[in-house]
Length: 521
Ligand code: NAD
Image (cartoon, rainbow, N blue to C red):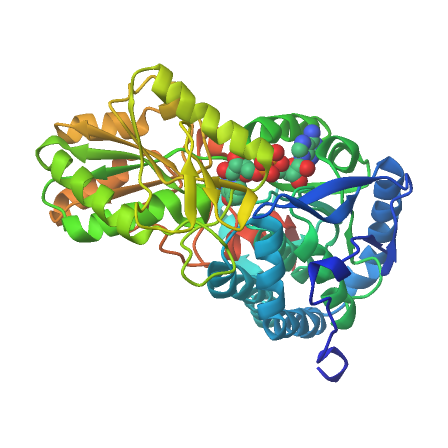
């Protein structure tokens, strides 16, 4: 532990000079080109991103390949010591990481400090524990052999059958921008814990904290080449990484359209691939629920992290006899409690969306809803002195942050189920609330989607709760709650939300090859 007890990170964005991290060294991209990067709260340029290309990817994969034999053969307990060091250093630098994450992404410092950064450290500790405790190998003894013998196959009855989980090789880890460092650590921790080496290609929109992580990895004593981080765009850096012949495994979190491309590329080359994709998550609120609790949670579900959560509760179906009461409570409480503005302020509930292009995308759905005749309301607090203007499509001008990408908490009602607003992922602070009558109708509307990532059910009737939860087509279903979390539970989606399950033992499964060993004795 001695060698990893401190690291000095930049404390201000102006001191951050993002470089690739390949074979334990920092380097400019071979092209010498950089992509522009902006603080979404101000619209001002910040730390530019290397525009890496195939040459950088080739160097990174070569470094990872050459480190693989050493790292995969290192005893798990020794790898675990390094993982725990990484966790300690993340914790020690929580304040700094949270501050810069907020300036890069727009999320509030409060939420980055309370959620994102501690969870990052938690993943490294969790997988250090798994490999230390060596829970992977199983021994089925004579059972398999006996079964085979009984159907007259040429297998001796005195056979020991065991499974072995081995590291796969070089992994490609590709991540999105809504939880920048968290998405990287969620993949990196299990990937290297079990002995893989890797090349990480974080999103080009929010690369700052992943760059800071390179300094943490270095200080924690991660050997050269085990983790390589190459910054740049999906097309220039991501695609060559997925296609590289020495990459055995691809773990991707991002949009469904990109996921489909990556799945096709990686699948066609026989790589193991994990796809964690978008969502359009429904909630089904019955009239016998705890209404106050439901309203509070649905406001959080709609607007937390600017609505930039794949599990955001963005389609809320409410039983007709409490529909108006739910909406009245939702409007009143949201106007009172949702403070939109400076993400560094502890009073702020949510900050700007990630880029001006994303603001354009989100507001285009608001305009579409208006054109289709839906009722669109912007739930801003009329007494908030920081809000200087609300545009017709929900853009907010915030005093002192006039160049920022702020969008009002938006409530849409009177919208058709078939509308693109109801069917496509908006990924912003926009929620649709729609009435339903019967249990069957609630379930049918909730399941009427190409996605299947998350869903929630709200009722005081425990029998109905279980019955409806079982019928919703989603990888994560909550009863009378939203976003309850346990890192030991499987995480993933159905349909366009993805094909895989990660976290806990499911990550261990994905990041290893499983071998069946039969020994005659
Ligand atoms: P995106 O698909 O645009 O990009 C994700 C990553 O893929 C980025 O690093 C990008 O550079 C890279 N990429 C893009 N094109 C590529 C290509 N052709 N080849 C290789 N890499 C490529 O997604 P985004 O806009 O960054 O993130 C938002 C999306 O992520 C939303 O849909 C959200 O729901 C989803 N998301 C899902 C989860 C989950 O766990 N299911 C979690 C967070 C975010």
